[in-house]
Length: 338
Image (cartoon, rainbow, N blue to C red; front, side):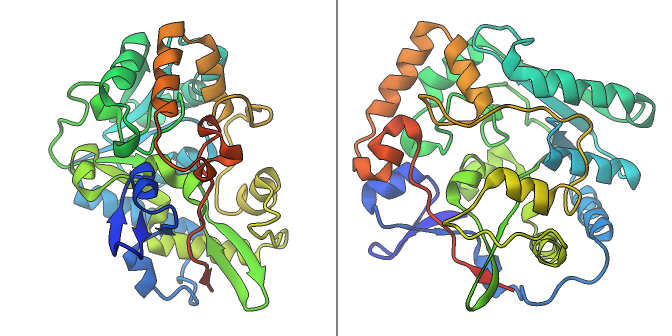
């Protein structure tokens, strides 16, 4: 995934850097996707495709770590490995708090879903899989904001400091495993319809924190599980054929309705326990967990974050409501008709 400047004939892997050079850059998903036949649904069931991809990852990595949050994406991946008795070397749960309060409301998903789910699965996984908890507190926030958080070299823009793309910068030695693969779930594709037919697409903002350069991924060792083209194709065909399919377009997209009607129970497993976060919004861009974290954070961390965000150096029209704290205006990928 990258942004491309037609004017400069150049790829950019970090959106801020791309916009500095050309505010009209286009978002590209993958060169591989341009060659893939999306019109033909992969044969076999969804469960078979999940199993095949999980086994392929197992066969090609010496150490597999799953970042598990308790959300529908990582839950589906965890279920796939367990049901098919495919070994995971490690299941990682990450909690964050700029005040070292890891029972804070912002960590409800980890504390009320992920950890209880792993305890319930203890007999099935603990004897062969490491369960590790990574608590990122004040020291990690300070390290990220004062040493690593520069707009031109990261796509992480919110106060939410952890993603598989950057945790190796916060936890020394975490990726020091031969043949490591860090598996993470990822946003589902959006499916729409127009006069030419049915298509899938992504908005760059839904994937941004997972986008890094190939060079940086040699250290991050990130695997975006659901972006495998076979899995992606199977998903969009399933969504299209599902009897609750809603023909959302980019102009009328409703994230909650799309998730409830088109995703859960179709190409994502049921949640172990559902957590409601309320509405998106607030002064700073990011999900409700990020908003809670910044509200609780010490003043010096928030001020450093604000200083970096305000020193952006690009056209304000690149931001939602001309406000750097609201996030970049999203750019759509091309529409892949199927």
